[in-house]
Image (spheres, rainbow, N blue to C red):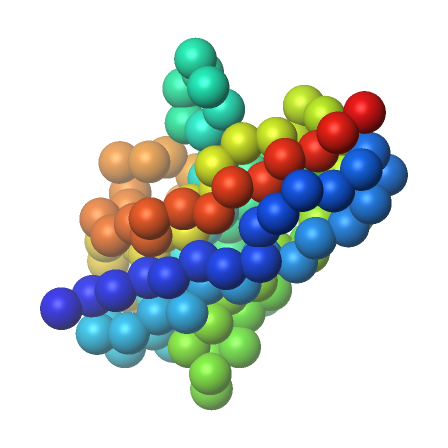
Length: 127
């Protein structure tokens, strides 16, 4: 059974930083692309960042580019999201997800390409 557990969320002031982590189990993590998504109240879930299985290819939504960094440690089966210079509009529940299919050269940006999701961790940024 595949499990993903996020941690690291919390309340921070605008301009502050948080580091989210996602621990995975039940799948050969190192062979699958990973993604971070977020969903704010009343809004649709959106892609934040994605990373290929090798870690060599990454994607960032325009809204977080230059502020967020996605990384992975295949030896520890974890994927992280370093979030700097946080803004109130970054407030949301953040979910990590694992891609449906192993291998490939790149990352995945569509929710459809992921089949397992974590329960989410709340990030709240005050102005």
